[in-house]
Length: 204
Image (cartoon, rainbow, N blue to C red; front, side, top):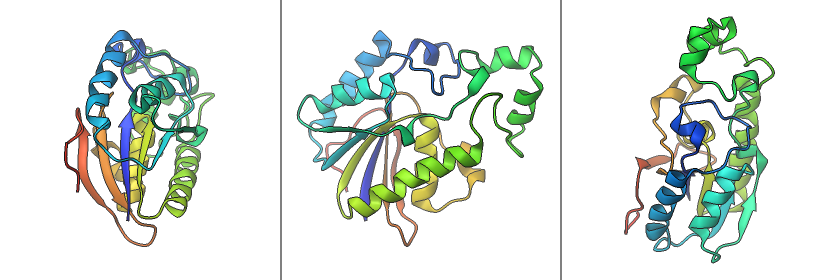
């Protein structure tokens, strides 16, 4: 199996304000930088064969802090967050107050229509799955660190465990958190660490 260390980027001002970020290229806040630096103390003890990051600034900066110049960083736009279109820069509370019909339908989590000007669930999952499968094929038996976003990390957990989309919201993925899964193309993998705020000194 391939071991995937899935790391969500650090906090941004929009994270702290609970605003949808999606493809908006927000930067890490001072809190975000501090939390990732704390995470980096444990990351240096982990043997990583390959390091990927989503191509948005908040993920790239987080990965650079973790790499500390010792790992080559490979950027991939397929693991960027879902594109929330016109909802980006607004909070769920604000959208509910405005009685946005598309958002109200989206919160019911049934058909989950695409946000206005944004990305459909199917398109989002398809691009993340393409990256995930390629990663497993290129790095069998290796340990891969991936710095990405909450939604993309949830999708990679579903792919690793071979779970249907209905479990998407079953996993909490906080900023500057670590989730570790072992994955295989032909059988369900194993989730060993979920949403941890630190790296463990020993990992199976």
